[in-house]
Image (cartoon, rainbow, N blue to C red; front, side):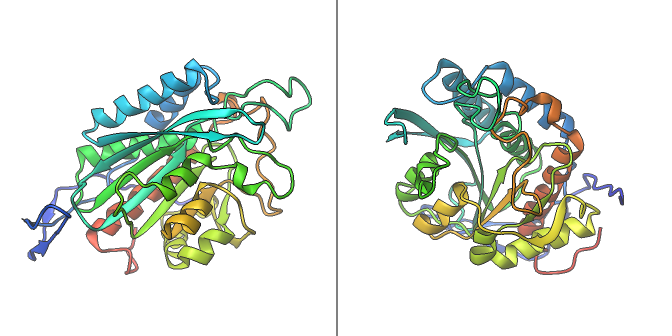
Length: 330
């Protein structure tokens, strides 16, 4: 694998001025070209450890609430404007779930926006396991890994500011669904709620990137069906960038079928093009740890976290620099 060194450089001032108009701002902002910072996989890994330390973070539990409060504090620590969006939804079991979508924004008045998201709740049962199937799982990969990558990106965005708007949403109640046929809409309850009731009633984004199960050893990410249907250009650009960065063993240039995940509901209900970066094998199956007690810290790879984190970081900073339309060399 080609090792790519992407280091923090000195800011290079662009000679042009652009007008950045938000809903309440007509100010003129000088856009600076920002070098792509280095994603720290150790930091992301530690964020997974911290989430697991809270305990089983499934809906309606103190551990879940503690994790939510921690996420709010971590975003605020990085100077994000944070909104806690509370909601209630009935699960497929009939249980009323009390959830909270955690929404953090930088440059909230800027019109040009990119949405980054992951879910932070974990599965309430290990229904694909053979033992203790009615007990909850750690969710080290399925939940915690996507959150961990976005928390590290939030730190970078604070330390190395860019001049586009970024919204990070940690969706709740994603993983309390039924695998029975015809039950697709029992999943992603938090993203379904947000898509119908956005935190800003005029909210729009150029596109969004969803991270789900992005930390396991041996993970591979293929071009998912709903993503290709709604955001093919963005998908192709991300996978092309990953290849140029030497990450093609993770970002495999193959199409797979349609995966019901948070991005599907945002596409359908909010009409925002979405890309789902999710570990799906060539045969369309998830990792063999999926919804089992094996989804614990032992399966997490810092190399996988680093690959996903650096590619997404590079893509976002390229977006701010206007480089995603050109063949940037690494």
